[in-house]
Length: 158
Image (cartoon, rainbow, N blue to C red; front, side, top):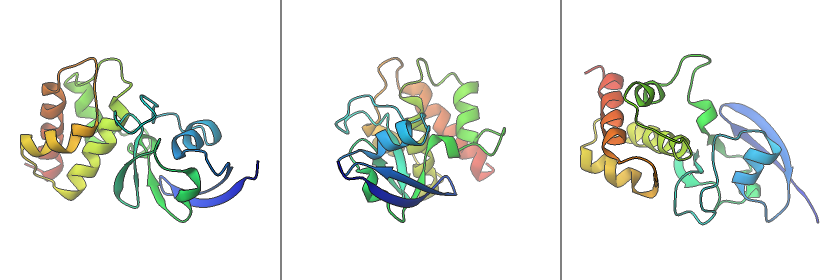
């Protein structure tokens, strides 16, 4: 099968890879680039476990082809922390126990970060709406919503 050469930027780093024309961005991230934070929960775009941002837009990486990443700016969960310093969302999720098994957590964190970049002061309803595409099978969503709101307040300096 023919491979496609792709040049892109992932978490601020210029990146090149070869992929099959039908290979998903999720498979490229995990299998070719070793970025295993995004998870395959469903493979159909219904669970959000594979969420990343592409050019500032939240996407399910299982539904995007790796070849479509040409010249894109991609952010994954691996790019959230600043070295050893966790992003406020990551830290607050840990402090408030807003996770259990962790399969959905990277996608939820990426989605929450995308929300707070667009709306730094969302209502609980807005957070719930924004995260509706991210399914958690282990927890109730109350701790997740509370953690997003706590981190948002901290990030605003409130």
